[in-house]
Structures are given as C-alpha cells and as structure tokens.
Length: 122
Image (cartoon, rainbow, N blue to C red; front, side):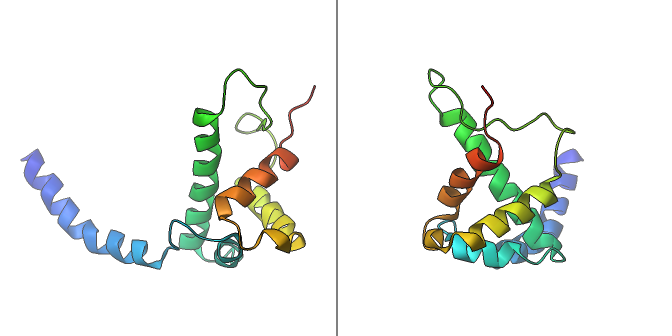
C-alpha cells in the first residue's frame, strides 16, 4: 500500500517539479543572472531558489574548507542576526555595487561576499 501511495504521489508531483525546474537558471549561472533572478522579492519560486543556492554555496564551503585553516566566514547561530531576506537584499546591493563580478559564477560572488558580511572576529 505504501509503495502504491509513493508511486501515485510521485506521478502527481512530477509535472510540478519538472515545470519548476525548467524555470530555474542553469547551474553555471553568472552573478548578473543570479542578481536578476533574485531581485524580485515577490517571486516566491525565485526567492526559494536564491535562498537555497546561497545556503548550498555556504554549506559547500563548510564541508570542503581545510579544517587546519582558520575559518573566514562566521555566520551567527540561527535566530541571531538578520533574516535570510535581509542577507539576500544586502548581497544584491553589494553585487550591484561591484559589477566587475557580473560575469563570474554566482557561487564565486557569494563566496566573495560572505566573508565581508560574516567576518570572523578575532
């Protein structure tokens, strides 16, 4: 019964997921394209993608950075500091003020920004 329920649910949701995936930028999206997508705070799908992208870049850094080196990004614990909406708005402002990074991968720009926004003290 469970297997049948999972199959039916997957068949129902697949068209939704497929249409959502078709609207997202390519994996090698530029900073300029990322900023363009993320600037509309009323577009829930775009915002969800932008939050997830930023979080993915940050977490990717956490798992790949050399643990022997001091961290350069120190994000405060959840519930302390700005909301993700505020951080995204600040990133967009920073990116617009730094158009020299427009053609770089968006992930590279995020990694340029995070140590500025969340520097480690000490």
